[in-house]
Structure formats: C-alpha cells, structure tokens
Length: 443
Image (cartoon, rainbow, N blue to C red; front, side):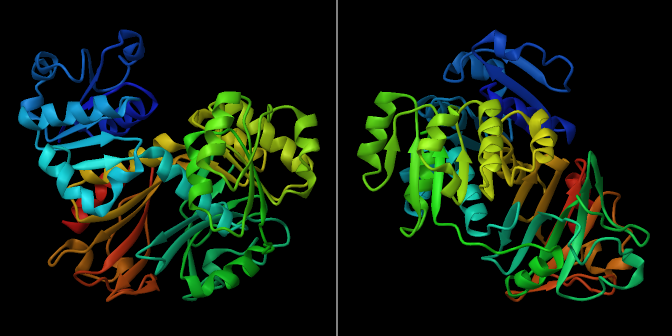
C-alpha cells in the first residue's frame, strides 16, 4: 500500500515506522525540516513541504496514494489537507481532529462528502483507555471485543497467585474459562507452550468472557476494590475527556499549574474541583489528601513527571496509578515501578490507523506497545486457510496465538481442537510485527 503521512510529530513518526516495517511504501511529509532529521535509518521517504500546498502534495505523488493521513497538531490543517488530497486523487484520507462533535455517527457521511473518510481523536481514545482501567481496577489492561463478548486483559501476578509455577503441559490450564495468550517476563514476551510456566512477577495476558472475570481475578490472586475518589494531575484534553465521560458517582479533582487553564477548566467542568497548583510538589499532594485517594492519574505533557508523581502516589498507598507515557523507551521502567496502567496516545492512534492498512476484514486492532504486540479481531472468510482444519493443525505463523472466537454473537475460548468457521470473529494475539502474516491465514 502506498501511504503519504502529513505531520512528523510523535504520532506521524511512530506510524511511519510501524507501517514501513510491514513493507508499505511510506512518505512522511512535514514543513519543518528539523522534525524529519534522524529518519534516514528507517525504510521510508521524507519530504519537506506544506500539507496544504497543492504543489507539495502533487510533488509527493498524492494522486497515486492508497491512503493519505494528516496528523499535524492542527485540526484545520489536517481537514484541509485531506480535502485537497482527495480531490488530487488519494483513494482514502484520514484526519486527526480535536473536536468530539465530528465523531458523531450522523456526521460521518457529511465529512466523507467533503473528502475526509476517517477521523481520529487520539486524546479521546486515550481517555477511553483510562476510564476502562478505572472501572476494572485490578487489571493493568482491559480490552473488550464485540461489546464485551470477549475480553483481553493483563495482570501482574504475585506469589499468592494460584497459577504460578504450573507448566502448561500439566493440564491445569485445560479449561474453557480463560486462555493465557502471552506472558511478559522482564524484557521477554513469551507465547506459552507446554514446558512454559508462569512465575511470580510476570505480567500475564488472558482472553476470557465477562462472566469469568471473577474466576480470573481469583486465580491471579487479585483483590477487587472500589474506586470513588480520583486525583488527576494535568488539566489536559485527556483529563477533560475523562471527567466528561466518567459516571457521576466518582469524585474527581484536577491539579493544574497554569492559572488560565484552570479558569477554562472550571468553566467546562463546573462539578469538578480544579486546583491551581503544581502536582509535582509533594506538599501540594499531601494537602489534597493523596493518602485517601483511590486512584491517581497523571496526564501532563511530561512523561517523566507523570512517572514520578505516580511513584509518589504509590508511596502514599494509592492502589490504582495511571500514567500517560509518550516515550516508549520508558515503558519497561514504568512496569518496574509497578505503575498500574500505562497510556500512550500515539500507539493507540497508530493501532486504529493500522487496521485501515491491512488487506483483511479487520474489525478491531489494539496495540500493546510495552510488549511490541497487537490484539486483532478479524473475520474468517469462506475458503480461507484458517477454516480448513482444527487450530492445532493450522501451523500458525511464529509469534501468533489465537485466543478466542465469537460465533453468532457468542464468544468462546479457543483450544487446539477448535474448528474456526466462516464468518467467525477471531481474536488473535500477534507479537513482533507479525500481524501482516495473518493475511495468508484469513484471506
């Protein structure tokens, strides 16, 4: 697929690297040459130019691209660039936006007629991930598929877990209440086979159903606790979307150092306590009774500050800590700090865009940047290889693990004897950039 990406910010650069690894023909365009520096080591082209210049877009070959993606920091630039690109011959276009109204289903056809086929709001996607984490408090990640019919979740298991030190070949895991699809151990990601076992300190990834969540929690040795009082550091767009979306029974306070931003937040969020202080100041946190807080969320623009304030919150006994971390190199550090949930909006956005580029019936794709993996929901086509035999005989590609299926609206766990049928929704765990390999199975 030929793809032109306008905007070499965090999202644009990450997306270019991701798609180039899958051998797409990628060009990254930006009007600031400094943002394009140090990109020579990657397998894609860079061009300096304006995303709203007809001349520059034509010079980049926009008329022959399969997908034009505008992810500059400016919504108006992205929308205008997509309209121009579409009229110059781009087959599909996608714009990054910051207006939630544009995402309403009734507006989809309106923007398509203007030349904008897809819209993405990374801050909304990030806030949704945080809200899911707050609702499912004992998990690190919670990813529902098909309205929760199947769920992928991850937890860090301790010495009290019932599932540690048991080899998979023992038969202990041979049931239909969950399936372990991956294990993160230090810097290694394991797709378990018979001789593998789960150890204390591992982060374990499960596929299960909503009705079996309590069983998974008990097996993992986790406590279910209530969250009511939430402290958010950083009055960013993500913080605003969290407050606007959370149910009313949560008590939320936001700490923001910029006075003008606090005034704006108070106007937008009249039922939320807004505190004009620096959330990095331990004395401020103490004065706001951090020790009595159930959940602490750090979403400032500074990843280091988010990690450090979450560490302070843990020291004061806060059980649920969530940090926005935009530097992927910090993920392993964050996990070693035992921060409950890590949110990265550029990888969330890239996962959404990635599904558009796959030559498959992909319904959903979720990125797990801390383990360089993705969870994909896709449809098994009539006559595809994946429907020809039971799972254990399919000779799945290396780094691919099928976790569950949804058939006629009902989910079930996959085992070696499962026969995948045409039109099944299949939940697949893919490690190390192996998503592209699914095309041979599902086409």
